[in-house]
Amino acid sequence: HRTTRRQGTPVKPEYTVKQGALGQWYWTHRAANGETMSCAEGYATQHGAIRGARAARKAAARSRIVVRDETGRALQTHE
Image (cartoon, rainbow, N blue to C red; front, side, top):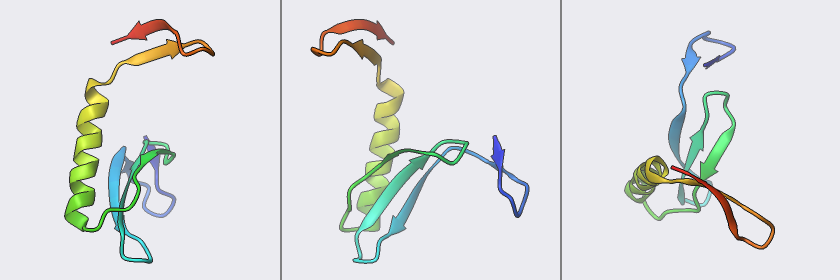
């Protein structure tokens, strides 16, 4: 895990929910190294953004990995 510069504490992968300048709510999924893994478009409410982040987290756990060629044909599938 990476550590914060100021506190020296480990940073875990997380979904962060924040309100944007125009009042919309957004979630961002960050890896342990701080890089953005995925993010959402704006939600009208904080609750909506939290529900969206939960749905993304749940879907990611069920997702498979598919390697495709340039035509879109599946070459390999990993569960």
